[in-house]
Length: 142
Image (cartoon, rainbow, N blue to C red; front, side, top):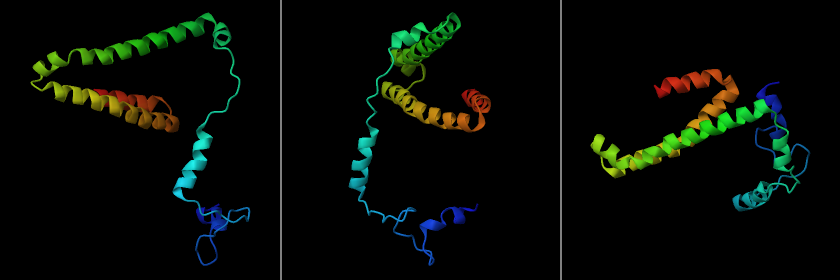
């Protein structure tokens, strides 16, 4: 099926967009404010009863607990490693002959772009698998 065939119901014979939904119902011309007002209500999570987390943790076997602990310690060490840089701003500014503002601006940029990089590499991992985005990430790190 071509793209034209897929969306043919959305256009009239003269090529102009139809003012109705595929079901034949008329399409409401919605303002931007109304659009966001109707979408905000969908952001509220459903109030479903969740399982007791302690009962769920009791279901873990020894290997799963060890995996959890290794991941937790790795995350903790990463946080410690990253934020120790904040404690050495004075020494870094002296070593690199930069002002403290330059060093803290660099730290801020790294924090801001971590989310951008994780988004890009997360999408790449979803699309291509984890191996090659991980390899590219390590090459960029070097």
